[in-house]
Structures are given as structure tokens and as C-alpha cells.
Amino acid sequence: MPRGGPKPRFPASRIKKIMQTDEDVGKVSTGTPVVISAVLEAFITDLLDQTTTTHPDSKTIGASHLKEAVDANPKFDFLKDVLSNQSGVDNQQDT
Image (cartoon, rainbow, N blue to C red; front, side, top):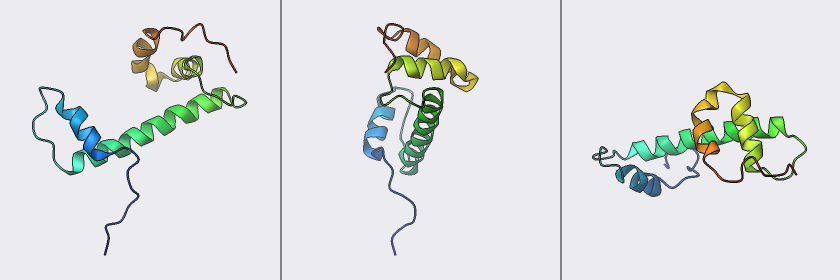
């Protein structure tokens, strides 16, 4: 009987490789990349839901839309530095 649950959208092997690029990370158990994949998917879904809420009529999500969503929601404050370092975030036109 196969194990239950949906297949992760982000490959566990790739997540494990990314995690192991950090010198502080030692061995990574088998389940950890799968959990990280699920958390990453939930995070991206939440961020995109917030973005589409602020711009419901846009057909394309741009960096400026993401920046507005991050500015509007305090739980995304940790992303402000990342978005402010990206060139063209403030210069893009809304579509």
C-alpha cells in the first residue's frame, strides 16, 4: 500500500542539496526536505494570495506587486530588505 499524502512540488533532493551548502548544516534526515518543501509551498501560496488580493485584476504578477503585498502585511517584513535590493522593483509599471 503506497504512503499517503500529495507529492511535494519542490524536489526533496534539491532542497537537501541547498541545505547542505551551509557549513553549519550537518546530516539532513530523510523527512526534513519533505517538510521544508511543504512549508515552502504554503509560504509561496500565502504570499501569492496576498499579492493577488492587492491586485485582483492583474494578469501578471510583477516585482512591484510583490513589494506592495510585503509592505501591506507585517508578517512579510523580513522580505523588505530582499525586495529593496532588487533593481527595478520601484520602476516597474502595473499591468
